[in-house]
Image (cartoon, rainbow, N blue to C red; front, top):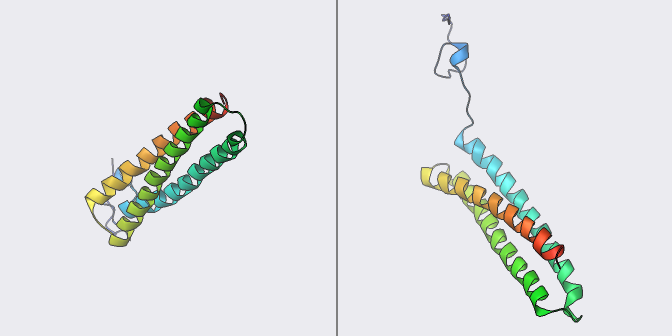
Length: 135
């Protein structure tokens, strides 16, 4: 049971009862966090690209079968696609922050972030297990 006070609180959260109050992050807070996380994931994608390039370079002059080189090229190409998704995510996040509104742009930012996260997991797994360890 909640007892209501006669004194008005400094910040009104919509309910006079303490147990009914919930504080959810604003859309701006969410997009600020997504922008930072997306930018960090862009850097992580570049780490995987660097790893692939460093492993590919010594194989170019050697008598390496084309199927091995193609595996590296395919992984590097998909890593660049993930890099593009990641950059698009940062751009959409920044555009929403500059604009300050827009439900559609907010949803696009969320979808791009989770697509970026999933694509990074896939390319990291593929690069590590199917290219480097089987190479």
